[in-house]
Image 1 (cartoon, one colour):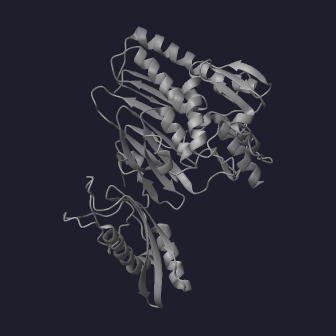
Image 2 (cartoon, chains in turn green, blue; image 1 turned 30 degrees about the horizontal axis):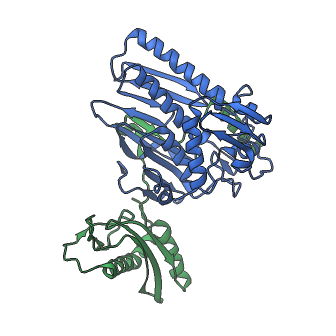
Image 3 (cartoon, helix red, strand yellow; image 1 turned 30 degrees about the vertical axis):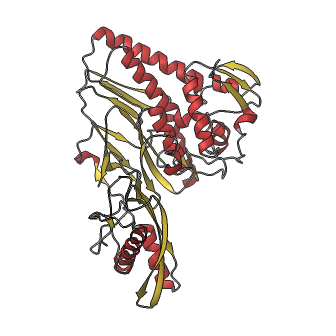
Length: 162
Length: 292
């Protein structure tokens, strides 16, 4: 997975915030269960050197500690410029984080920029591998276009260039 | 290795049919014949790209017309999805696609776009008789689910001939069946680079359908247009859906441009993966596949 230098800087401050906020949300919903939590990364965690520990239960029994639902919390951290806040919303289904959103609440321009970059990129990014190197039965993507369509595309490209 | 392997062009795209059981030479000929006949019947009914099709006729005059029996499942799903997507998934999108330039001549020259008619103003379809009453003629388009449906129809033809291990692939919208329970690995094409895949899905006795904005794209448009905004969604680059039928999988790949997976899964059972425009990935919890 790819990370830019900006992202690494953002991650240094913001991932721990995300982690603390997540634990905070899950702690808030805990209903006194004594089960041992597993440590799993949510589906949407980026690969960086500072992975937060996210604890969640993967049980689906009726007395699951984490009620299904959407939870929002504001976490705060101290940036080099001062105190900043980051909003985090999690959706929990059967004890697993199935969706997450972050809200940019920074007030300082640089922090805002970092938070926006973080929000745009903290989820898993797709990475490509050459099809020629893979053993695949089939490929699925957008449908191949017929000659008529391709010819039309070429025509408008030519016209656009002239 | 398949004993029956046929590639051909149909309904505006490239198809490959593989049958893994032993197919006799006689069967192969008869099967191919039936397949081509079914495709022609389908195309002549539902295509908006033919001047001699029923859909073209329906766009010209009010009146009562008869659709074939396979229209039942198609219209039923369209109606359900029309409702659950707040009318964004609609068969009435044909006029909008045409105005955007995706017309019978592939002019790709956008004109002024107008909101399409709503379903009840345009036509009424009767599920018990397959009759369609056109109140206000307009160009219908079944492209969002038509290919998937044809995949299912051809899969049924193969089953009727007694074959149970096969793959019907309509250019990345496919159904795969295998009695030996050997799954099929399907590479998910990178929407930005068609020499690459971003992951591999595994299917067995299911359909996977893919949709992306990279190929059928011109000016500010691609093949999915939102009837409310009269523009093509820009937040998603690629979608895959895995479901028990190609009709459903194909239709849902379009729906996911408009409506959340959460809303759609309240009524339909499917797995999905979405590549957003910023290259982030979202997928269902149990999507059978790995991403790199």
